[in-house]
Amino acid sequence: MTYQTSAQRFADLVATVPIVDTHNDFPYLVRSQLHYETENDDQFTFDTGLTCHTDLVKLRKGGIGIQFFSCFIECKDEDPLYQDFNKATTVVRDTMEQIDYVRRLAERYNHEFSYVSQSSDAIKAFKEDGKMALAMGVEGLHQVDTSLAVLRQYFELGVRYITLTHNCDNPFATAASSVSGGLPDRGLSDYGRQCVREMNRLGMMVDLSHVSVKTMTDALEVTKAPVIFSHSSAYAVTPHLRNVPDHVLLKVKENGGVVCVNFFPEFIYRTSDKVATIDDAVAHILHIANLIGWEHVGLGSDFDGIPEGPKGLEDVSKYPDLIMQVMEHSDATDKQISMLMGGNVLRVWQENERIAQELQGEGAKLIDDNWPDREWKFFDYVEEFPEVYPGSFQKKKNVYTSQPLDACEGQKK
Ligand SMILES: [Zn+2]
Image (cartoon, rainbow, N blue to C red):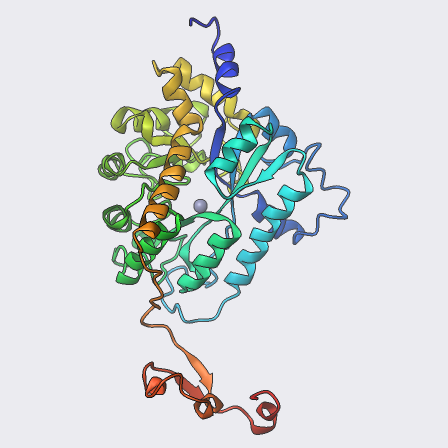
């Protein structure tokens, strides 16, 4: 079919293919500015328009089919290079609040949204119900606070990808920002390898945005399922530590994964004045498509997690403009454009689900290893309790401290 305009071509495609964006930080704005108290806030007019990058009006205009909201919580230490991962933080509580808010949003606006945790439900929401599917990702394994049990519970709550690091190291992996801050690139730890195996077994997608180059290549070696970069662009076009170098892109091709291009001006500009436009986003998409194929590129805007979008790509209403620009600047077929719009992310999601099923079918055991350096602290009254089996008290290394007598007397039974 020949089209007179790319607008007509886009209109035909978006009727059958969902636009998928793998990274939007709107929940974090609501956290930091409103402490999630939106229920009785008359100024919170999400369904008729807000001043940030994301609201229902703009999402509809942007033709979004499936939106992954990031349940991001920052690394808690004031020192971004900190290495004491036993230090207690509020990160799990805070992540739960993010998860709660995404699910609240889906419920509150359920005439437009459908909360999903399976790719088939996302497709059904788009194709049969005419709704936008909302899914969740967690931005950094620091958010599981050293524990695979927490990771499993996030999965139970519907989280479908976890970024291996944010801008800090954790017991699993090395972050790109730590390496640029002068720390060695240790890549994935042994515990991190176990974590990737557990993510594969669950069907939790491995996200390699934010991680160091060695973490990228280590994870690509270990994983049995295709990976995503939920919000990263191409290093060859804009040399920034958050972008993906060509030699890693080539491995992503082998792995069958997808790199979802981030729109943050600082990651995509091509001029010395660091100003970015929609054309820069197109250049990143085309670089990835030309190097490793249209099967491996997607959209991961980072909207509302960045101060502003590039000129011409200011908020979530602008995806149609971006797709039309790509049509006009390439000879991509409709099939290739539809892979960029969302087909690739859906394929990777489905593949992660299929591999998880296969691993569980083969009897892959749940991984209950703990981080070997974890500190386990108890009050010494637990030493009076019965042994699980002979010798079990000596099995693991604990730190025992004494509790004041009158405080513990009533509680220990
Ligand atoms: Zn990020």
